[in-house]
Image (cartoon, rainbow, N blue to C red; front, side, top):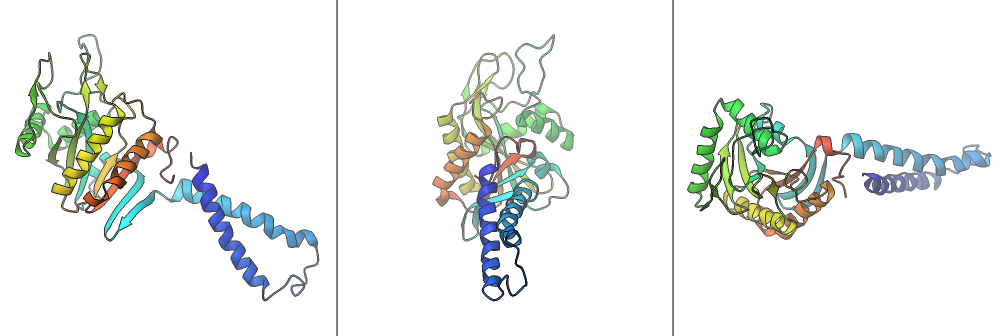
Length: 286
């Protein structure tokens, strides 16, 4: 996945080394150094590219974890590898930061797995939404019903109006895709719960590419109004249980495109986060 960026960086490193090598030869020739063997003279032409691409591969794969995409003054857009939940709950992170968690449009908080007595389970514990609900409730020692109450209060506070729907389980108010609930997290973290998908009658999440773009644009507008220049961390969306059918690479491209076309709404640091475990699926350097 990183072959393109590795070649690009390798060419830059190689070009820099050849420039230095040529500069040295302008003062000292091979003859001055007593080098007569042709193969020895040719050796730098082989070694420099080899070492350049090897060092490029090491830097891209093992060292570089961030790629700045855009910068204007103090405002930046960056893609990085990381773990959103670690950014949110790890005590080592103490600066204010906004963590975006994609959720369904009813903002459910019931996390469950399929089983003998459960028909059409709601939130999967394997999704970021499900992992966040469990982590949040565990950290603050509250049950999902109290978390749900806080979410609904936040939506009302920010004047988001939902529509009543009939459901056997889960919340019975459906909000518009792109609506956001704000909750305070630990260590000065702030959660933006972004509605990006709708559950069908079997509680399978659904969203299309167009809807995803609209959600990201709504998120950026909301961030512009409420973010107060606090760094925001956005995960890849539409790649898993949302059934948008997006590859990780396509999701990254869509988010980058939406962010860059809304640069006038960026007041702070926008960080697009690719989960560490997905490094083999997408490169942040393309």
